[in-house]
Image (cartoon, rainbow, N blue to C red; front, side, top):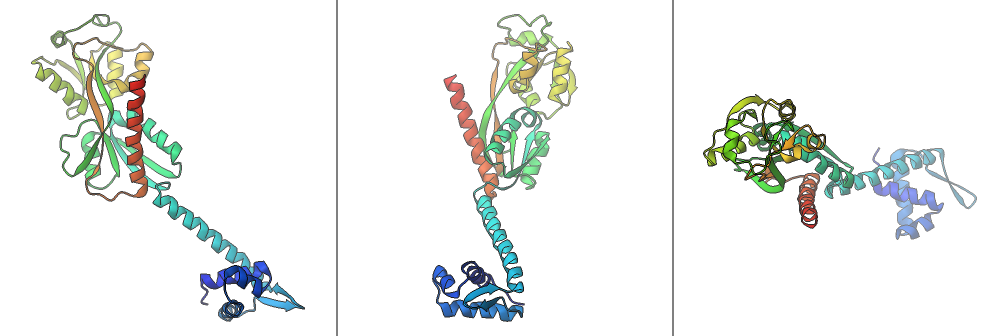
Length: 305
């Protein structure tokens, strides 16, 4: 059986208008041309689709069945066309995102939530991992884009500045330095610091800050998550340098406080990254562009505040 969409389209029009001549006028075709296409369709199916009762054209049982399937076929085609248009416009598809630990927990979700509200048809996935794994996934084409705080080797990557990453020194509110003003950095050399594991971007930034000022960094404990560091600081086990973005709830609850250390906060940035020279899907490109606009909107809001 050889049925083509052109024949089905003509058949559906004849059924809708109940007349070869009216269907031909609606389709801007000749009446003989319409009749020939319907006859070819009947020959292919092996069953009559129309019968004349007096001067009126009626669908046969086979015609009624074929009309039902035709409506479903054309409805599916319309849906397919819409999906393809949405894919091309970045309103559908899947985008895989990876983020280094602190960014993935505190910075990226609000941005992805804002994007989801604008493009609910796009499926988003987020892997939160250490920065080395994030960069490897990006280069291995396992994710579409990434958000990281420290990119030491940007080779083969397209990198764009994202949102500010302010580093602050935190302590328990019971700490002797909690209410002191203008604390010199060298005073902190006497304190026990709680740090992330070796290789963490925040740890590298902290070590560099102290090295640049020839100040000793006394490491008391290494912890593998920002959450663990906050709990340890609140429990009076030491002080820490952390991104301010990760501290909103703890500061509001009075569990930790920001020390007034000279030279702090230290201003850094989170960065967007994707493979250089890649050909992103429309949805991935739409998310990248949205995140750039999201960054710009936050910057404007901060200036006007």
